[in-house]
Structure formats: structure tokens, C-alpha cells
Length: 343
Ligand SMILES: *[C@@H]1O[C@H](CO)[C@@H](O)[C@H](O)[C@H]1NC(C)=O
Ligand SMILES: *[C@@H]1O[C@H](CO)[C@@H](O)[C@H](O)[C@H]1NC(C)=O
Ligand SMILES: *[C@@H]1O[C@H](CO)[C@@H](O)[C@H](O)[C@H]1NC(C)=O
Image (cartoon, rainbow, N blue to C red; front, side):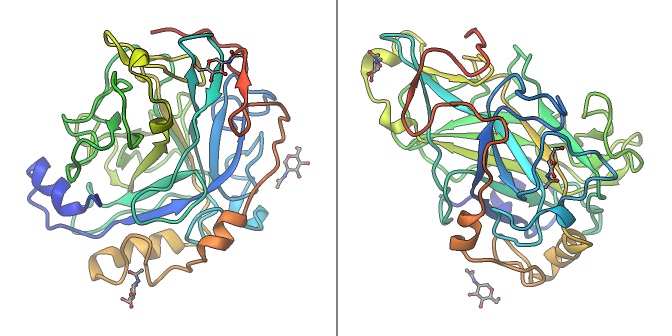
């Protein structure tokens, strides 16, 4: 079911009025072992990513000099001025019978038309007096940590779909770990980014210290810390993994489940998301300013340019790191990059 600001506001006990947010689809751009944020220039990067957004995505995207809005000729997102890139690790099924891997396909979220990819949100939770500062060209950030062995459910979480909906993402009905049961309607992975910025740095060595959460890691409150006083849009990703096709009681016994992330994580605690800003000119700022007016919401923001689902789906990029990352149901002997599976 469609989740909205009211639900989140009520569950968080926020006193702010329910406000609009952007919620839109971005289809698959490419799937490959590339990571211009954490391992720029490295081909191949250590693990497989599924990547959406502007087609200027590249192995190296220098902050300040590389402008995705100028270099892209299309975007896989609904809003045709959004040439940002968004990516997460891919998910694989590891056969409990023979140990081979199959990449889990992705599907469209409720009410959206897309080819794989993700749902992207820009939310106003830390806005004070409805004001948010949009990201500057060159801005990038990382949420989550592939090395994490800890449950951090409030910002990195999983929902076993088909068990009741309508509550806020990463609520306590979701789990930090990959659900240890069969999820007939799929697993939704959610990644919530920080909503406060230091106002100065476009990036930081760990790609995190220049931003901060206002609410212990989860959805924001209108209270940024003094070290990071600038309220920025709270970015959130939802990835829909089509796990329903992996139906076999034997695979989900005694707390076990058969899925692993592309970097070998079988718990799910290490799921992470990368964000690289690339909106054209001041289009994102205009949209954020229009959210409280009611003229801008979800995938229907009247101050932005909207492209058809067909056009956004047509925006694809060939792998630059050419290798078999598990195409269309293919079975792989190991995870691309050879990560060992750990739980
Ligand atoms: C991507 O990087 C390659 C190698 O540096 C370069 O030749 C190409 O022009 C870049 N593509 C874009 C869209 O910037
Ligand atoms: C490995 O197991 C999966 C089911 O778990 C099966 O679909 C696949 O065909 C098997 N592959 C081989 C090479 O036996
Ligand atoms: C988008 O907003 C316009 C104007 O408010 C409205 O006419 C239209 O039906 C909306 N479209 C969707 C898909 O909600």
C-alpha cells in the first residue's frame, strides 16, 4: 500500500504538518561492478551495483568538475531534469542445494511504472518553516556500511511484503536483517539518508561526516545538530526484490534464508546506498520550495519536467566493466568479485 507523510508523521509523533514529498520511479540504467564514490576509477569495483539515473554515470565522476546534468543525454528517472545517480548493492539467491548464485530481479513499486531500478524519495522531515536547502553540484553521500555486522534498522531495513502495510519505513515491524522467512510478494529494502548537512563540504573522506541524521539514524525531525545545521531533503531509496519466485519451505528453516548481497553479506546489515547529486540547475530547489504549496508531490510535481515511463525505461547504459554479473536468470559459480558469504 502507498505509504504517506501522514503515517510517518503520526508514527514519529511529529508536530509538523503533514507535507508533500517527491516519490518517483527510476528504472535500471546499468548493473555492473562500478563505484565512482567509494572506489573511483577502479574497474572492476569489488562488488555488483544496480544503478539508476543519468546516463553520464562513469567510473570516475570528480566533484566540482563532472556535471552529470551537462554530460547526460537521458535519465532513467521520471523527472527528466534529474541526472543524479543512485545505486545500491545487488541481491543474489544462493542455492542451498548446490551453492550457485542467481541475481534476484527487481520489480516496480506500488503505483509506479518502471523496469527494475528503485523508488526515490525526497522528503521534508528536517525542514524548519518548510525550508530546505537542495544539494549543490558535486554533492555526494553514502548511507549504510558494507562492513557493518550490526542491526541498524532505523535507516537500513527490510520488509517482508505481503504481511500488512501502511506503516512508516524502517518502523519496528521491519527488520534490519533480511527476513528469515519466505516473502511471497518480495522483499523491500529501504535505505534512509541523513537530512542535515554541514553547509560546507560536498563530500568527506568517509562520504558520511559532512552529513548527519537529525533523529538517531532514521527519518528526520526538524532539529538538525549544531555541527550540521543545514536542513537538506531527506533522500530515501526503496528497492523491490522479487524473492517470491524462490519458494521452497526447506530454504527458510531454522532462521535461515537463501539471499545474500553482492558483497557476500548474508545478514543484510551491510546494505548501503550511494547518492551522487545531478539535478539540472536549480530544479531540485524549486521542487523543494513548491512542496508546501501543494503544487508538487510524488511523481507529479508541476514545477518539474516529467517524462513518460517509456522514455525513462529507454534510458540505458552499456556496462563499462563488461562481465557476467548474472544476466536474466543465469547461474554463477561465485559472486562477481568472489566475495565469500558470511552471516
Ligand atoms: C567516461 O569516462 C571515460 C574514460 O575516462 C571517458 O572517455 C568518457 O567520455 C566518460 N563519459 C562521460 C559521459 O563523461
Ligand atoms: C542449483 O540449484 C537451483 C535450485 O536451488 C537449481 O534451480 C539449479 O538448476 C541448480 N544448478 C545446478 C547446476 O544444479
Ligand atoms: C497531477 O496533478 C495535476 C494538477 O494538479 C492533476 O490534474 C493530475 O491528475 C495529477 N496526475 C497524477 C498522476 O496524479
